[in-house]
Image 1: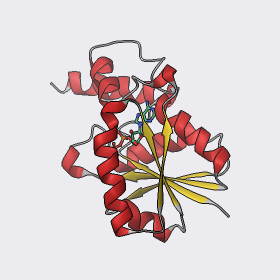
Image 2 (image 1 turned 45 degrees about the vertical axis):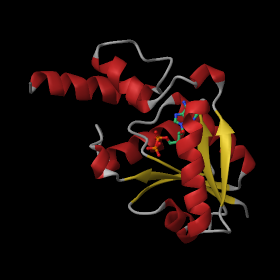
Image 3 (image 1 turned 180 degrees about the horizontal axis):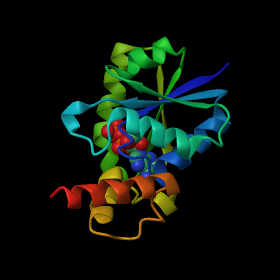
Image 4 (image 1 turned 120 degrees about the vertical axis):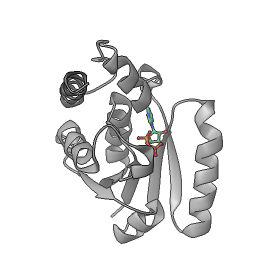
Length: 164
Ligand code: ADP
């Protein structure tokens, strides 16, 4: 049984993330999407909200499970018997930080392989931060985000505008 973990903030899940999970789900028997708590990053959505959104975006993939986690990706992978950590690369700009993280994870867990999937060119510019920025300014984000995320973003920014 080949098991992979795909860790990230997913604040919120974009179509780029969905594409990476979909492709990983064809390569592995089971994929765990690991939603990092990361309170230091002051996310727009709580970990519970990010998990619920990711579950709604990925419910059509029968071998994918979404879970929140706190701590090291390598620990999450070990606890879920994952032998691979999936990460996505959008451009060369992602390489230095992803390379450093992969080396660190290799030092922490030598038996865990980090595997990189290249972004589909259609979603290369789909980052959670850019998505939030343009959604907050009222842009149509249907090309970047799955429907549950579009709804959640417009509700969140409506509430934020109402509450000043
Ligand atoms: P993190 O805070 O761990 O970078 P993200 O949610 O931003 O969490 O991203 C999780 C992973 O998904 C990272 O490996 C990132 O490079 C990758 N990723 C993000 N957006 C895309 C995209 N549009 N296409 C492919 N991979 C992506």
